[in-house]
Amino acid sequence: MQDSMYGYMKPGIVHFKAFPQCMGGQGPIVETLETICEDDFWTAVEIGPVKDTRERDKARKILQVSHLTVCYATQPTILPQKLNPHHFDAAERQRVLNIIKNCVDEAYQLGASFFRIMSGKDPGDETRGEAKKLFIDFLHEVCDYAAANGDMKVTLKIFDRAIDKKALIGPFADAAEVAAPVAAAHANFGVLSDLSHFPLLEEDPAKSIPLIKDFFCHFHIGNCVMRDRADILYGDLQPRFGVPGGEIDTPDVANYFRILLDHGLLNREAPPVVSTEVRPLLAEETSALVMANAKRVIREAWAMA
Image 1 (spheres, helix red, strand yellow):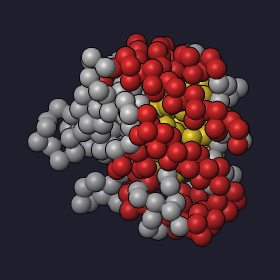
Image 2 (tube, one colour):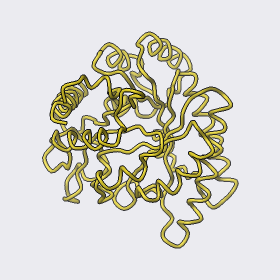
Image 3 (cartoon, helix red, strand yellow):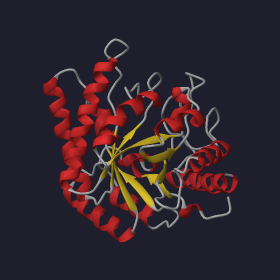
């Protein structure tokens, strides 16, 4: 591919994974955000909660200056608290909805254009259908709330169902089933696929991407380790590209780019955010090293695509 990748996508980085000390909404958030904002390789950044209101205001101002596209992710809120937006108890669903609405408010405060949401735990075969209906209702509510307060778009991120997160959504066919009625009712809704989750789902991007191509899409690239349960990196931990035992490296990213280009999902009319989700996990790794690793992989993969 000879054209600049910046004409087809907005390369981004997931802040709280590259700097895991900020995962819980505390720590050196402003300082680490500055590191990303000062690096003109990135044109998008994904952030999580910022608990301190003064730090949040500082982060907002830095992001305004940076000219980065800002995405807000709810995983750091949902996963530690084990929130389930399709819980079978109505009072619990309302509690979760209220928490997510607060996240929407915070995302707007930080200047986010996109809002990431995920499903809760998969309840199993017998009640999965009911859970999907409840989750559709929940997504309608979130999209309504986001639209009532600004123009931020809501994107559903697809996770694994059997190995690590064990989420309802889940396989791409189920993602399409849930997304269709929500997208039909809300122009501010779409789906996000993560390259690192295809091995965990035992799905092929070439076969699964077409299932969601009609919805507004964003994309993640990352890696996972899944063949050896004894490996300390086993599961959905987002290790660096090329880590021993990992599933994803430069040729896989290049293939992903080719598939997305073939379906017009990387395009000049509306370049989507394509964020890298990697973190330092081994003793010899640092945030700077894994981000440099990711940038090299993206450049080389684009050249191969």
